Image (tube, helix red, strand yellow):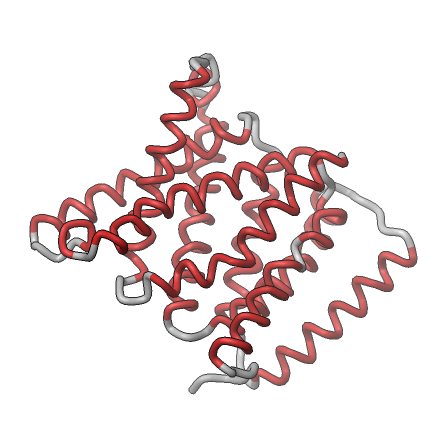
Length: 263
């Protein structure tokens, strides 16, 4: 389990720094960033799979239950990524932090309800204190925090599916990215045909950042997937507190924003 914790820490620390990356792509629509993200993640995953030269796992993907599970995981991932990228570039970084403060609580609840995990009294106390903190932030927000709730629950249920996944981390990500890339490629081709694709009109630096979305996406998610298979949800909750702390600190320092509702 110790190795799984390190995998999880790597993933969550990297995600905590991602708002800076997405902000550098702020002039590009969120749906175009998302399309590039899934396509270049698939390209990188395929390169790694070619290097490994092991394709026996494809037989498992042909099973209906396995394929349906990965379709569902890909859908949850697409929702999570789109909302997160849009929120960061629309100036709602602190609100995304609330989502990832809620996510550890969602992980604990799902662990208890789905995986029948048990919590010790001290753990219940820590969860209760965290829940009160989240409740306070939600009340302070003054409205239903749909961004936060969408991020927390989409990623929480994604984690459940990854914990039950039959494929290894890299192979599973390749399947998910292949599913999402179907629409992503069509969208990028449509933008290119209309002469509005950032890949063909933006500066070389921006194009490099778009291609780099594959790197900053794939490796943290490989770490997360590896951790999800090794670490109970109640244990991973402590690591997942890092992204919101990083996000909120970055938002407050760089934009001098406080947590409040946007009308």
